[in-house]
Amino acid sequence: MAPKLEAVHAKGKRYDWGFDYARPDPKFPTRYIIPPNGKDPFRIMMRGYAAMETEKDNRVYGGLDSDVRYRNANVAEPRFMEAMKFAVPAFTDAEYQAVTGAGFLVASVKNQEMRQGFAAQMLDEVRHTQLEVGLRKYYLKNYHDPAGFDIGQIALGNHPVGTLARALVPAVQHRRPDRGVHVPQRGPGDGLHEPAGGRASPGSHAEW
Amino acid sequence: MSAKDLTQVRDTVGISLIGSAETSMAVEMVTEEMPDAKITDNDCFYKIERDGLLRFDMADLAERLGRDYTVHDFLVNMTSYYGRIVVSDAAVEIYADILPERFRDE
Image (tube, rainbow over all chains, first blue to last red; front, side):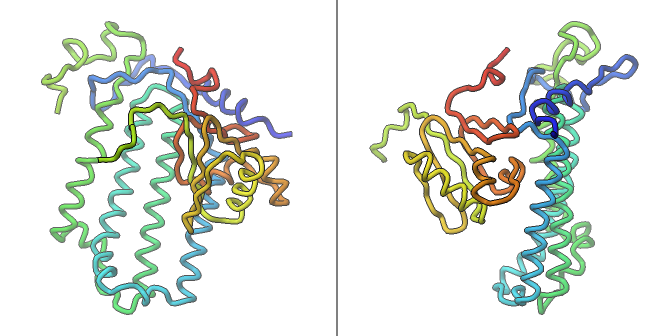
């Protein structure tokens, strides 16, 4: 009989370790403290999560497959499709940067239970990136006027809209989370986990 | 201005499920076993709401579907929820209260 999810999840939380030679400071200090006893109600474990992701992918790619056979790409409103030529590469970039955002959380929240969920979130964002690149390829091959979908990645780097998208996403995705992730692991005052002069306060050098 | 009193305390919990064969079984189960639940059919998804507790038993759903059914299969159909969710092997439960003890502050 397979072990219970509750038991496996409880065991998984014990696979944690401290740092005895490196400084485990998060990249950006914060004035917020997240308690180390946060709990994940979903009890996310990689095996179960991978099964969910597989099912979701099967549904999405199954839908795209039937779209190809029904020639649905050419039923779409042309103005919508022109907007998608800008939007899809920008969203792909946003998903890719969300991978980084989840990585920030994994590196910063000193709580193994939450980290498992954040790692799953990271994989989910990787999946979104792949799905959207797949969508771009679908439009490129199946829409009657694909010009624009073929240069999505180049435009993201060179076109003014691409530049705006690249500049906007980190501002909304990365700036806030990194401020809520500083958790002193061994208690305040040990000098290891706090910036010089004590915990960062509003207006200090750590505030940006 | 709405006359509804938004400050009134409620203990309603809810879940949205994508329309699928599994969701149809879940809706059927809720209709039979939690008749006080409010079910809204929004064409491509269902919203299920109830006071206090919503409980989806995987063994029950598996029997109705005639095949194995896990919480992970169930969560694929879940788009959102409100309340306090607890996921275990046997069931997905959404409580209005802070239950079980695991979720209370230590």
